[in-house]
Length: 220
Image (cartoon, rainbow, N blue to C red; front, side, top):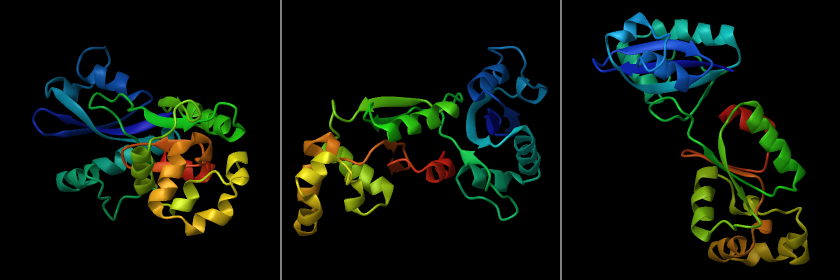
């Protein structure tokens, strides 16, 4: 896996490079490990400002080269999430990390016996994406969590229900949901994790319900 990154130094300057391990590369830049760059050696690196996962080494190097052509203002805008018109990030995914480049684990809520959950976990593992795993049956999502995740997902509330589940069918919810208020639906979802569509992947800026590989690839 290759990444293109932007690193900020103590003097405010920005350094752009590529790596296969952002955390290790940051440690090299700070002198904790061997192999840093001459540019950052005297400028005291402060933090990783932005990191993108690339589809391969060539793509990572090309993005590095394109970012280096940007003005300082454009680079600062890019860090804030505003992509300059002359830069395309279509094939790249920005990842969330700690200031030192370590990935921030996302919350992966699943049912271990579920085949779809297993596929989703394999997808995450193949991309070296760290997650905090939670068993949806052993630890039900709370009503507040569900409200927060729903807001992040952008989905209609009915899409949070596991409509193919045995419990959903036995309660005949397809007939009852249209007459239930949102408060009633959230309370019902929180009553049993098996009613919730799974897996659920939660990060700072989004929540995904169910596993659709194309959708996950676009965000991750």
